[in-house]
Length: 306
Figure 1 (cartoon, helix red, strand yellow):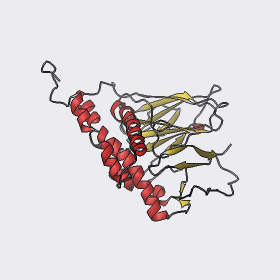
Figure 2: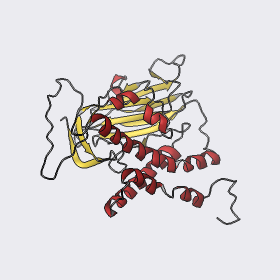
Figure 3: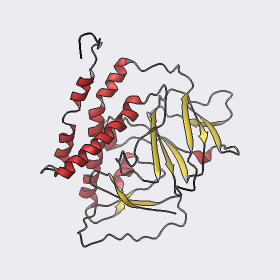
Figure 4: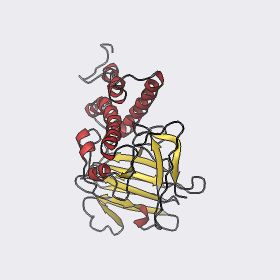
């Protein structure tokens, strides 16, 4: 950075890049304390790069004044055991704000929007849980003949508003949207937009941009580190070759409309894991997936309801 540029006392690009040094080594110390293979090292590099890009979208770019649902977990940003049938999106919101969510429902299995109260940079909240005030279902809204919907999200119902309304909890920090598709070629995806109605939507300050950019090292360590810790927790508390409801996910909030079952399995090269279970007569959706010891979904390892 030359002297002709005024940094305003804020970090330069090189400063921000320097802050990312050591992130991979930090994670490898937890994941492979006895040493990683060349393939494992490159795989961790790839995962860290994906969560870095995820952090830009969901930490740096996101703005409660100008909300946009941004992609969170998926095939490329493979963290948290993402379900291939889901599209996960998130946006930050201001719990004192008024938002309008509009769009077209489409024909996918379901679309749910959950109010979340934790800050993704707060490792303690991730590990110990936080309340989940509301999970909203688009099917509960008044849809017109084209599937169009419009719902107000605010702390209180506004005088004169007679349409759909969702209460915005004072603890809510972000929204998580899950769109589930079971017939990828035959269903129509939901289209969802969000706008803030009570604020001017001014630009993010340089100080706030710099602060969020500086959060990226912690974002990567926190996101990947949490899921590696979750896998270790299952091993220590569920045991090996055991399958049971995840008391950990239940205790930290999870998603109230879902039940999670987890198990750690060790399978030799000449063995196979066969899962047998009676399916509930009424189930909106069920799915099973295999993930590695960082909770990254293994490609081609899922089964689900038709």
